[in-house]
Image (tube, rainbow, N blue to C red; front, side, top):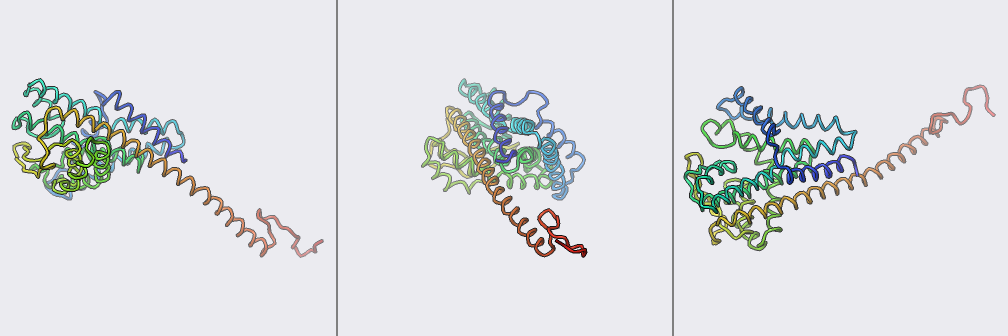
Length: 357
């Protein structure tokens, strides 16, 4: 197996474990640093135009991926350094522990009947207007956010890391962060943020499908999850949140979607899991546990895929080298017969014109 495949597997496992044990760094979080740089770039590049928004997305996301690629090249000859870089990048881009912590904080406040504390914590999870929500609606918002962010904060990053290493990890998180910053339909960003939102749809596609499939596999009701996923996923306005939320709704046996409020704007979304019961506060913990199982399975799946890929590459390399050597030897032999030289260019007979033995 090639060294780069092994370094991803070991590094991703270490970074995943670090996120479980430590969570996000309290200060100087790399994603926060990127966010400040992206905000500064927005102030310079903003125009109410899709073209300027596309340039902004390319500069920010492409720049982050390019820096990661440069760092990867500098450590590629040191397996230990490559593992350390992959572990640090994985730990930096994953947000599973923070997601679970914030979801439980809202759930605990709701269980205690403290709606004000729940409203204070809800913006850490999603951009909805908490003042417009009652306790049941906040519980539903938490479950939906846990479902969507299982893909955005963990699985999607692991998928791109398995496909492209550290640049894939960093590039995915950069795109996802840009979408959170400018991808919403506010008057300022409806055109400028269009490119970032569409790019996020593209890079989020594989992770969301894997998340939905693993939620079906790991959930308490696989049959219900498959049914709701097939029936309701396409009705969601987001091509990536739809499958994930539908799979979670079916797996947990709850009803998601409906009326939402974002910054004073009301949206009426299709219901996912029609016929299921409304979300209860206790379903927050059930969603958190399902999210954790999905994350672990995603790590196993992505590491396994990278191991298989590495084994296939190693197998292809051996016959390739042998065939290349055979072709070289055959070609040199033919040239030797024509010119009287051997494989190393040494003459086998004297042909200087002065006679021979």
